[in-house]
Image 1 (spheres, rainbow, N blue to C red):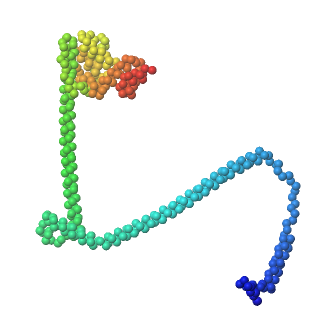
Image 2: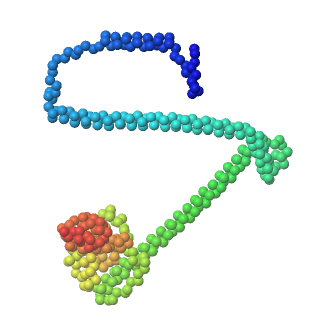
Image 3: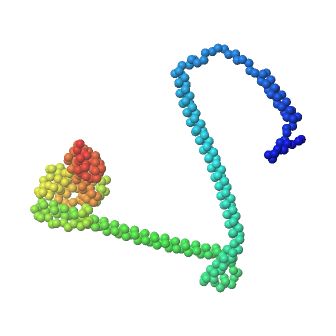
Length: 367
């Protein structure tokens, strides 16, 4: 094949005529076959029945269908989004579970490796540990002064026996110390209980003596007022100010019919202002209602025969003064005098709610 060299420095290669002509013939043949196939497979004419397009549905119905399709498309979009989110969350959970399982597996392997290392370490230092234990037991044996010569001359015991003997000795010492502490605590509790009983008895004796002294002073003032004498002043002590102790033991006793006939306080003939004041206080007690049933009988008997004030009155007064019931009863009497149509239980409940404040209870009832 001849080559043509040009002066510009490149070589021109002439085409192969036979090969070129063959390629051209093949291309023309394929084009002719393609044209012939298209002619053979050309679609025929479409035969359709004449039809009027549009106008079958009204405009309002079309608009309504569009709105429905729009709403449904929004709903489908929302459902598709939720489904995608659910799949995403599920994939994340599965991935997290895989990571957790992998971490658990790693932790299990690490724990097993640590156990194996500990076992190897124990096996490695077992001889050293046993040697140290025997040295410690030997030192304890040498330091113990309770070992007899016969025991020292006999066959030495094993380290296991020595360790158990040492543990038993320590346990006995701890038990003995614990028993000593329990005995000491029991003795202290008995001493404290005796001391409390003694203090309670002393307090009861002082209270009884103070009750008698207050009763006698009260009756002396009554007798002095009736006879015109000046009563002697009563010296008060911290115990005498608290003269209201509760003694309702006589509530369950049967009352005497002679004492139960209590005279009307307005019909009692008194000779002095003190007795008038006492009768007025007794009438208030009868109107409100005493918490001790035997109080009315014994108080009336004391007024009638000028006898010693019964201990029931002293105990009841003592308790009311000690617990702050004096102000409570005085407030109750004033409210009952001001509002007689209210029941006693209701007035007491209102006073409790107002914490004994008369003004607040009065404003609450005066509506």
